[in-house]
Image (tube, rainbow, N blue to C red; front, top):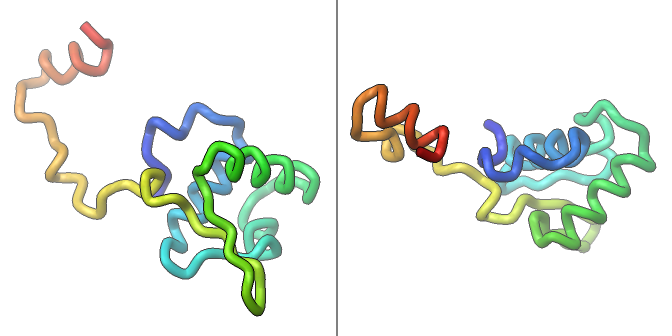
Amino acid sequence: MAAKPEYRDRPDVQVALLDALVDRGDEGMTVLELRAAVDADIDAVEDALSALKEDSLITVESGDRVRVYPHDRVVPDPDPDTERPTGGLLETIRNRLGL
């Protein structure tokens, strides 16, 4: 599962982190797990996590281990069929183009 489309215009590392976190949902991930899931060096991962936290797109909880969770607004609805457009093909294209 991927993060909602409105959060996909961010830098590649941030999008990859959000996607990895959304996949793990309620479990969250450690920084080490995130580093393994994303193809970027640790400095890029740290910078991306800082930016995501600053924008309130992730939550960081510390206990026995530090775990990172996606914010609820980043996680897409589990049933995408409920948001399927009711209009025809032309209406869908117009909506996507903002016409």
